[in-house]
Length: 117
Image (tube, rainbow, N blue to C red; front, side, top):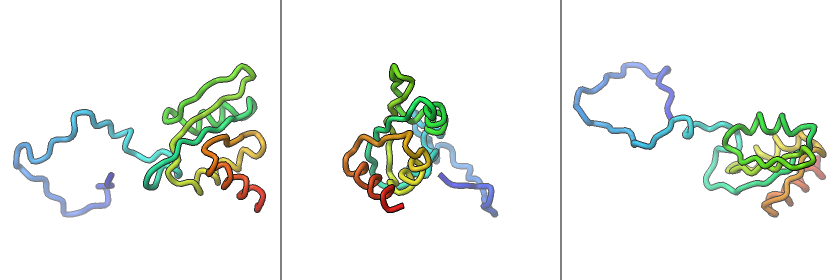
């Protein structure tokens, strides 16, 4: 992704077919939606959000997370996390109303982060 609004002295070429975008390209899927999207590789994190904050988490996670509603009103959300520190910084804002259950290495980091803070 490039911002072209700051570019100057651009000249468009006139060579037909010089660039053909991929047929299945959806630009909305290429934009980073969360700070934890930036990075190489990604883990799939699973978090349970209590009923009281489920709507907030669902709204902030958007369509890129897989949400499963539980009978008690809580939700279980799965999302890709490429930048763990950014994700943990966001997650800590839910205090005791969110539980990171997987992967275990990320859960251990989160527990250490909370205990140190």
